[in-house]
Image (tube, rainbow, N blue to C red; front, side):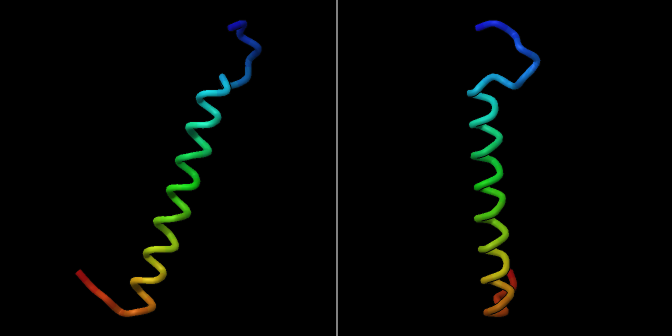
Length: 39
């Protein structure tokens, strides 16, 4: 794969997955706070 100065597709996809996971965690935390469940 030639280097074009951009992230390889696999890395871009990986970062996108991390963003999605981060968003899911944020939503879960908001839901927990809304129901006032504390660990």
